[in-house]
Image 1 (tube, rainbow, N blue to C red):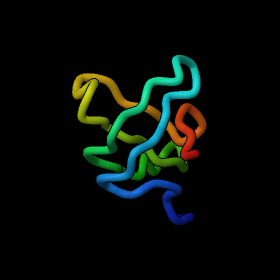
Image 2: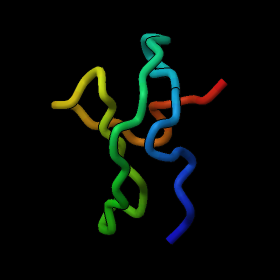
Image 3: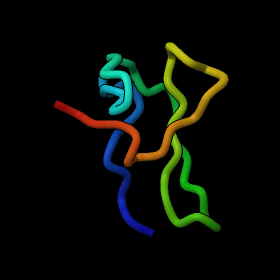
Image 4: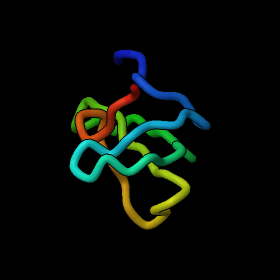
Length: 55
């Protein structure tokens, strides 16, 4: 298992919209072998690392 790119509380941008968001929770999805993130601004949606960027 690799280390996550982002930590809880980090401010990141959503690649598709450029919207600035704050990570609320991260979780490793074992069967997909990658991390998913829930952000404060969109609590009912999750994002994968490749959908987020940190400037």
